Each structure stands twice: as structure tokens, then as C-alpha cells.
Length: 119
Image (cartoon, helix red, strand yellow):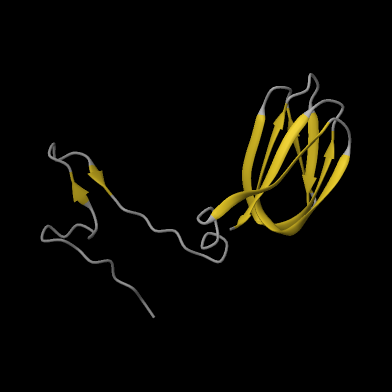
């Protein structure tokens, strides 16, 4: 099965909206697949927690996002599934993931964190 993009009267792809200067244009884009249909729309902050040392957090429901603020003076690291991330002192990490329930944190200073999941 093939798909042909619609075109305007000038033979240009449809859904292209020219600007008044004639050189720039706007192309609306819709992304959709099994992961993008879930993210980040409809996610809310859930199950906030904090600490000052190593810990493993098990969320009560699957999360699809994670935010952690490193309030300490040293780098911290955390892992979700098999991926490990480093957060420098004073930085905030924020990202979306495939659904997960466990995050492991290695830290020697203060941090604050929460998951992002369905309301």
C-alpha cells in the first residue's frame, strides 16, 4: 500500500503553510508510534522522594519519566533498567523512558526526585 502526500495548487506538499515573506514556511508534524503515543502527554509528577545516600526506589505504578535534582556537592548516578546516568552537583536531570518501576541511586549528598506516570 502506498501513500501520496497531498499537494497544493503549486505542486508543493500539502500542510505546508507559507509565510508572508514567501521564503519561510511552517510544516505541522505529527509523531506517532507505540512509545510516542504514551509520552509525554498525560503524565504527572508522582511519588516524590529524597535522600542523602545510596537507595533503590520501587514505584507503586509504572513510571514513564524521571526527574532528579542533585543538591549535593558531588556527582550522583542512577540507573533505570540497564542504563546508567550521571548527574553533576547542582544539576537537574529530566527525561522520559519506556515504562519502569525501579530506579537505583548512588549518592553521597542530598538529592530530590520523583517519577512521572499516568494520573
